[in-house]
Image (cartoon, rainbow, N blue to C red):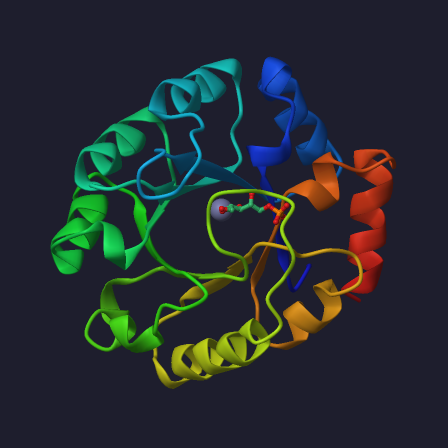
Length: 221
Ligand code: DX5
Ligand code: ZN
């Protein structure tokens, strides 16, 4: 079994045939679909929402979908994304007035809960909610756009987050999002990641999805 899970951030996919793009990367070896929702308010970009998520489920996409909510406020979209077929729902603490309540809402609607940390957001938000979390998402770029450069001091943050998770009895997945490429993926993984989120490295590449994912898996061996 693979030690690491690969997630495709569909932000860099071709939205004119998104269902096919997702099927193609799954066939090529992707484990999880990372579904970025942006609101042009919390982040300076606008993407897709629960209607598109539901249409992908209706189209037959069965893989795990982690919805990465970059929207403020967040609670209404938690409910609509859960109803549309999300498995994990991950939000930023800055987007909720009551973090514990938003996590409970995710659980109430049958999904697993993730908390996302911007490059400058402290991990102290974890202090009182670790027992309720299923996933921690560390952003290695500022949220809003694909194709940005990995911020190097995030390696230390990943190591720190891994330590915190290991001290906790619960199994929490550590996902890293932003700027991961063929040159740094091994170091990101060794720093403590479980899930590696890849956008432009997969979708904006001259190689076929099969070839690039094969190369990535070799890097992770
Ligand atoms: C950025 C998004 C990321 C992004 C990753 O706000 O959350 O998921 O799409 O794209 P790459 O891998 O190109 O940095
Ligand atoms: Zn993301």
